[in-house]
Each structure stands twice: as structure tokens, then as C-alpha cells.
Image (cartoon, rainbow, N blue to C red; front, side, top):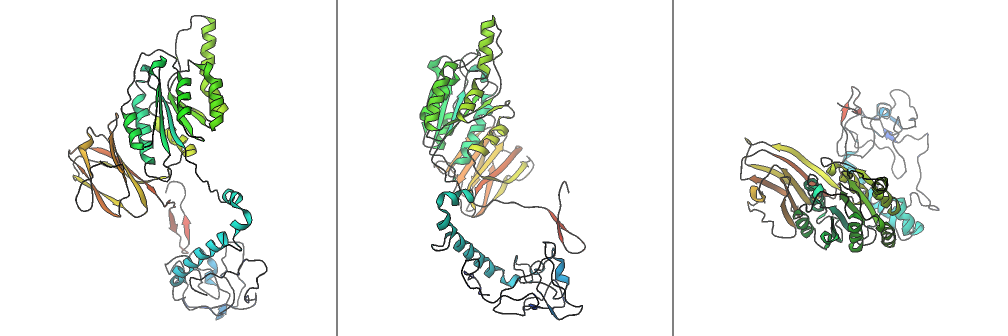
Length: 460
């Protein structure tokens, strides 16, 4: 009625609304077609009315066949009442006339809806935020104010991890890359490396994700393959460097040798409200000499489960081929990165030397993982004007992992068409994702003979 201006009295207790059309009063003019020509079908002005939608628990009041007037329908393919007098409808849901009879008012209706929502939520007099208070408001709308935390890892780099270390490093690098410049970027990054003897244990804290990536890239296994390892000391070092409310993710294929430190872990983790979650790829398989050593072995295998229980973390049994998938599950729970998949394809050797990459204004960070590369400079990233990214600033990184994955992360790109350019005509697998302000969801639909849009479920 008022264009983009909302009707602020609607829904407010004590306000006197404008006149409302009665049940007997006709509000729309019957038109010849049901899919077009409905722009001027309103019969009433300065009265509140709405459009009936069959199938949503209500029935449009009937009018005699051939009647020139009647109640308004919602309209659109999913509403069968649009075939009854008054035919057509008044919805403004889309800008497509076949779907929305009042498509021409969609933009104004959209602006009015945004303004009305804002008023409903935060108006200084009637907004529900004023009545509920911040805590209940955040709870009601699932708003979580993220505190500054650490992204922390404790990694077993003993000799027995030789077959797992590449997958572990690659998984951590991909995760850290996805946080760079994002809304979920942590305050700092913690890397605790543990081994046996204690002189090999070391821990670092980095303010930059790029520094963290460089550090984990340089990690290689050290020492013999004896078992178990000083995992508890590694966890304690990570707790010491981590900010409160952080989660420490432990990677190991062995049991803990220093289980006597568990009470200290419990105390220090509780002080900082830190959780410890472990990804285990194996257990010690030593020969037991006597009953006492066998008892200690059984006790050791429960160490990580016990630490998880007392800190609120979890334990995942995995293997080197599935570390990435398991970590994805962990991260969704403790450190969401809100990545969206843009494209996944095989770049065959016989195809063009360049491949287009489209960037829109919703993208905050573009991340490209290229599997099968052997050198960092093997594939370049080019801007629309033809210049090449040098990857020499904190907003752009290019890393080659031990698994021959070339990972590029570029922040703050302007909308436009960019290019990947390869220097060797080899075959690669390319996965492009982005940190985006928009979450895309959808479904496949098909139209039946009546013009209704039905959701196609299962495998179409």
C-alpha cells in the first residue's frame, strides 16, 4: 500500500489498525488469465486484506461461477485457488509474472519487509531486543559472539608417524589456509610437537596463519619407532600457549607414556576451559613381557578417552587416508570456517593452458587446491588485467605440500574474471572454494501438468 514503507502499527499491542475487509467483502476483480495481466486486479483500497492459498490449511470463500469479483488468491503455480473467482492472485514473492501476479511490486515489498523486520527486532520502543535483553535475544536467534581463541594442534612427530605425517600436515595446512582473513580467523595459532625423549618436545605460538603454515610445512618425523610417546607433555605445552575457550586437536598413532601428567592436564585445562580432542591413527603394538607391563598398556590406551571426558573433547579413531574427512567433522563442531564449494574439476593435459576463475562481490577469500603439482611456480594466478599474483603479501599465500597439493589462498579480490595459468601441460585435479557472505541452498524442482512446481527428491 505504501511502497517500501512498512505498516508499523501491525502486530503492536494497543494500536488501532486500519479497516479490515470482512469475510463477505469482495477484494479482487476476476481477470481472464491466471498467469498474466493481474497488475490492476485489486478492488479495495485503504483496507487490510490478504490472498488465500489453497493447501495451507484454509479455503477461499466460494463465489458463483462467472462472478466478476471475489476474494483475492495468493496466486502462482502452487496455489490452486487462483483458478476460482476472483482468478489470478496478488503475491509479490518474485519478479516473474507467472509466479507472482504482482511481480511489479516485488522490489518495494522486499524493501518494506526488510524495514519491518528491522523495526520488529531492534526498534527502541517496541523492538523485541529491548524486551528480551541481549542474552535471551542471542539465545533465541542462535547468535554466538565468537570470543578470540587459538587454533591449536599437538602433533606426534616420532618415527612411527612416518606414514601419517604427510596427511596430518596437509590437513592442518588446508584448515589454516581456510581461516586466513575470514570472519572465523583465530587470534593466534598454536603448534605443539611431541616425541620421546622430552628434549625433542617443542611448542610455538604464531600470530600469523602464514607463519603457522610455514612451521607445519617444515615438520618431519624424528627419532625411532618406539612406543608410547610423551603425548601428555605435548598437550600441556599446547594448553600453556592457548587462549581460554580453545580446543586442542591432537594427532598421534601411539599411546601416552606420561599418563601421570593427566591430573595436571585436568587442572590446567579446567582453568582455561580448554577442550582436548584427539585423532588417533593407531595404538602401541609392543610385546608384553609380564602381567604388569600388560596392565600398563591397557591403562595407556584409555588415556586420550579419559582426557577427552574430563575436558569435554572427543576421540576419533581414524587412518592416514581419512584424517582430512575426520578433521572436517571436528572443525564443523569446534571451529566452523563456512566455506562454500565453487567448482571441482579435472584439468586435463590436452585442455587450454588457462582456466577462468569467476569472483563475485560476496567472496571474501578464494582458496584453490591443485592436486598433482610438483613445484610452487607450476601454476600462476592471473588478474583480469593480465598481471600475476606474486604471493609476497600476507593476503595471498601459495604452498606446496608433501602430498603434491598446491594450495593458493587470495583475499580481498575485486569482482571479475581471473585465470589459472599452468606452465606445464600436465593433468591436475582442482578444487575451488571460497569464504562467502552468502550461503547457497537449493533444490531441484519440476513442473507438473497443472503448472505446479514439485520438489524432485532422491536421485532424479
